[in-house]
Length: 153
Length: 370
Image 1 (cartoon, chains in turn green, cyan):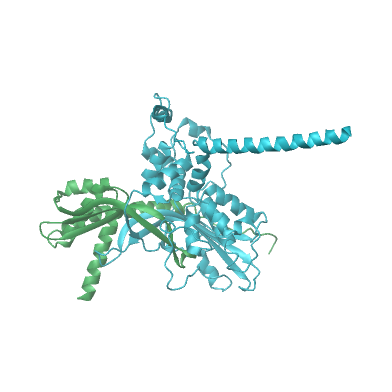
Image 2 (spheres, chains in turn cyan, blue):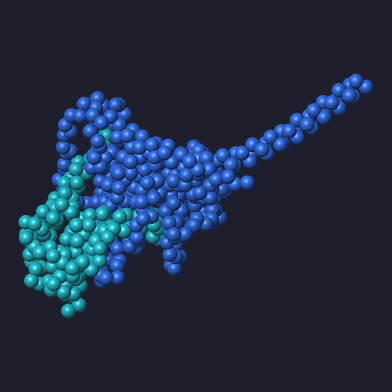
């Protein structure tokens, strides 16, 4: 039971990560295409605030505060009673609202598959493609050292 | 006597209208859009985010336009904006070891795991102005190279294996990271607070101080162990969720400076370290920060404090360009009453001085006559 709960939490977190990483416009487009309900009771927000970003001294030492970043959050409740949350970098309120609805729908077994297939999977694919392209572009600038051999042996 | 001065409302209103006009410039030239600034003046945007201490590209771009490209004014605007927002909390500390790396170089190891990745760098360019760019021609897509993603451990982890380098900076177990946006500066300060101040510090000021250490003022033999630039993920602990909520990614630049150290009464001979971490792509700033961080550790490492870059109160009190510009620029605001008082004072002293001088001359004349 605890294993299943942990797995479910990890899956939910991955969905929230995908939504937070994606552009608001992409989420709106997929939402419209999927025809998912976008009605929900707003319990909080959408509202924009700050988080203080922490780093670590030397990369892995004690934490310190680097600076702040804008974050927009929203909390919604569906007619089914499921409550969804979103926290995402930036100031896109529509994105925060839709992502919170997506989180709530994902928790509803009646909608989870639809959210996974119509919203999360395409966003994830686009993010993975962009990440892979960036990695490949960076990899093309990798220095290949070669050794100059001088003399006969 | 205090004399209140009122007036100038119309002049101020018209001056701001004129500012708006000059900011817009020639109306036959298309107005800049924020996305153009975000995309094409990205490093300027990064500087405003780093020194404005607020990660938000569109806001930084808006600040740059509003400030007509005056970077310190733009940083000022961003700092003022952030005070209007509520605070949701402190993120979990980012892990630069899991960064999606866009550039990574080391000056200490040629063959380090993950390799040397030049990324989009100005290094090795010839610094010749490019007329083709002025003409606005098409730009080719970059090359790509397929291959397995390699893990890229921080170079400090590699050096640590030999035990010849000090570990990442630790604090006592119960230490809560200080926050200069919440508490006033106090000296001496812990390293974590110093790093927060340095990360938002003025690039030019820190660059000059870092440079001074290289030229012999608090010389500490630095090597760039590693500079890496790329995106890291942010997570925030919130009460409504049983796990840390992912927020998305930000781009940061990290510099691990490695410094030769001959040892002191407080520490054995080893490599010591300075650390730099800043928002956006800015390796100059990250390197300058790391040089200053190391110089400011003089007391901790038992070194003599002999140079400006080692003087914590001097460096940290003057590194914030918003504070600096505020105090310098306030000098141009009306000081009519202060100046009137000073003028009266100087007049009186001068009168007394002249009287003394004349009395002296009269005395000399009298003596000469006798």
